[in-house]
Length: 305
Image (cartoon, rainbow, N blue to C red; front, side, top):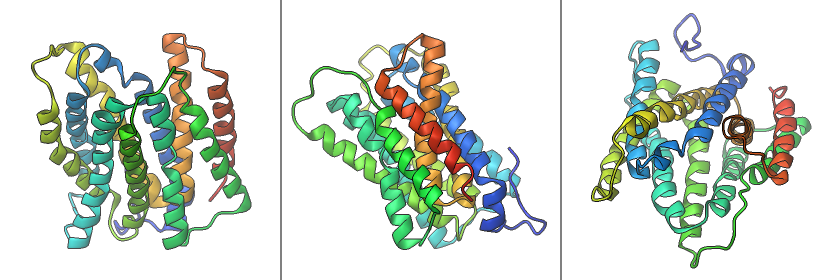
């Protein structure tokens, strides 16, 4: 993966990078996350627990982190602020993912949880407008609103009944807030440190929480250690890791109020399409409405600079 740099080796200007790169990186994230979403539950169905899937995911983050750092000559930002913001971005992302699998989904229905956490761009947009003073044109705001409107439609899953209690809701709201804050600080940190360093600290944060995931694993239960277990999980989770790296680049060059809703709306569209092809599953009409809204949003936001 080739990293765009200018002749002096510095990070390109936001204006130049936005025109040249943000949409490309956002689309790469969309493609990889869309495919990842369609395949994510395969290892679990084969008998490989979600806690161990998290561990595998944290390991896959090492590969793109090494490739990215090599591209910039291993020039890691080591200042106190860089370390702080890098780890903050990493912990909110990795911690949110761990809470999602071991907390929210373990206590509540996925068809109610995912519509809540998929609205995390609302947090990102509010923080970016208030503190980063980001602005968009009327066309841009229309695209953002359509993307936000599409997300709950795309997250729809038919289901019967609800779980007792509200513990799942608390977990879901924590993930919702954590991922919204992560995206904001990802954009904020890109102003003072290189994207490669941000991702490196994200990788460290994921590995830091891996022992907790191992501790939460019930090894007394049968675990599939074959090709459909950890090996399948590795191949699927590397898609997420590469998509996370290109998302950091998208936030380097593009505005958070555009990148965040675009990637959150577009990736599920691809997931639905791939699932339709692989599993012959016809989406619910509510999901189709979401797909239409997301496609229109993508077309509008692709012309937003």
